[in-house]
Length: 407
View 1 (tube, rainbow, N blue to C red):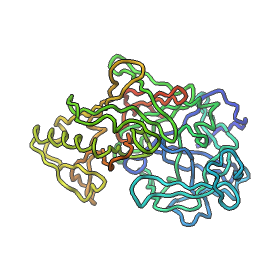
View 2 (cartoon, helix red, strand yellow; view 1 turned 45 degrees about the vertical axis):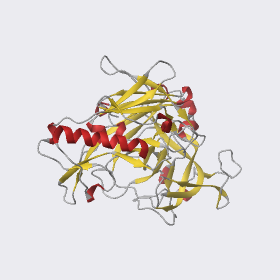
View 3 (cartoon, rainbow, N blue to C red; view 1 turned 135 degrees about the horizontal axis):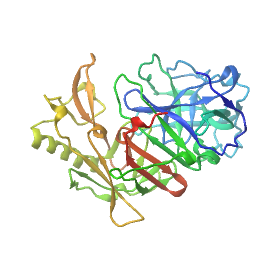
View 4 (cartoon, rainbow, N blue to C red; view 1 turned 180 degrees about the vertical axis):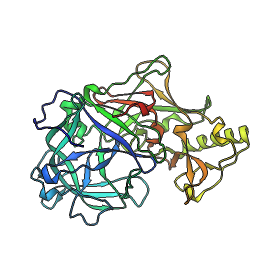
């Protein structure tokens, strides 16, 4: 499909938008467009609200992760290396005489690692008013030349590996959200569609003034305070299962500096993770629900190694009632708490054997050791609209059919 390009230099009053689609089973990506002419590159990258730097894998990498096409940065006439003296080169790390970076992901080894050089390049984003592709010159990004333990998979209905890196959306200086401040105003909205097997579903991320959220008589927009830094932290105060408050000390969710405690919202993590002192009461309540209601007992499954709590698929299980989990958030603006209700589609997923036959279903909330931060991952964000208003330190959300939010 041909595109209309507008080469004005970073002077667009309109908002920008980008596609959002599914990769693997529960990781969501957008497509970037960078470089000019014969070196134009349009990779898929993971939408990551838990990362600052946007990066892609580049040619001449060694070692590399599997990827169909890499960015030919050496042939790009619009590519420039970032100097170690540049204000964006923080921390000051040298790579081949220019600014470098080294990133580790996750908490449990072997950790994925990306290393390379920081560059500037022309990026193209779709104008949300005109649908034209507008050029933004000189945006800083990472060019990964060494990687370890990184495994990105193919999109549904596509052959080969096409995911080339990460689209970082925190509020730190190297984030494209910040570099494009004149267009984004520190605002973005997305609505993550549910997983529909063998179907490629696309939604849209909106930035700037077009990042709006609406509700109706049955779907109320709710807003909670949000702390931003290396991550976006939310004020979780408790968890309930079917209207029963779990015995969890709320102090374990208190924000105490990046990476130490608290609940962060992270679209780059497939599944939510709770500290063990919060996860154990949740697991017990889910077990008690299924045992009391249907006599179901947990079972282990080699197809579900990523999950801790799984069940066999019993006859008629799709017609059964499943428990609701409610996340309670504190608010600075009103007395009481604000609730996010997670149902079956946000809490459980079916697992299959090697032949594609259903073997059971598992809870998609995982566990990490104490002390640690907890994570609200992408699977738990399905069919919610989220508006990040970074400069006003707040996050708004509303239950929404994200299949209607089509590009």
